[in-house]
Length: 173
Length: 101
Image (cartoon, rainbow over all chains, first blue to last red; front, side):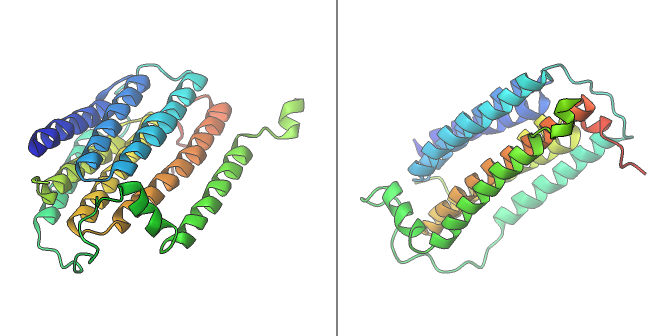
């Protein structure tokens, strides 16, 4: 049963990922990205990360992809892309580099890693539920990182406003 | 939990490579951005896999932070794309070649 879920979800994730990079239309790419993110959420559930799966569907597949679609529609660039190469041999080189990366990364997963001992608290996904487990660590051990993400989000918002704001001189022209 | 963690790592590695190839072959800046999201998600999958393999929920917390960083990155990146489009009327990476030597 685990294998069935794993095979279906990973095949869907890889297929949709290929769809993202192969569709001519950016809107189709965004739709394929939703498929990939959802399949990854299924893989999260299969590994007892239930809270992250919910966040993945809501934040990624919901908010972020909708923002992509919004910008695509706003700018009106949902046109087919010309696939003429302006750089010589860019595509073959890109494919070769991607193949090398894939082989290297897969080889890395086959190696024997020197990792620390497994945590003493037992397998994750205990009776308390995943959200509670994560929250206990998030608000104790990682509380400073958590506060810093709040700062980061504020910086992001201010940055976006400064980037997109029209200067008063531009408006008056 | 019969599926060994290394199979998840292989899927994540392939996803990362697909995202890398897409980033290199696509011209549309928005699609390039989506490929970056793809690569981020591949790394998130490895974090969750290692969290399960090492029985440490810290790996899942890191994924939580990665999602926040990704959201902030998308906000700023789309802001840059919109402001470039407003000035240059293009969203294709090949047309943004002013810095070319």
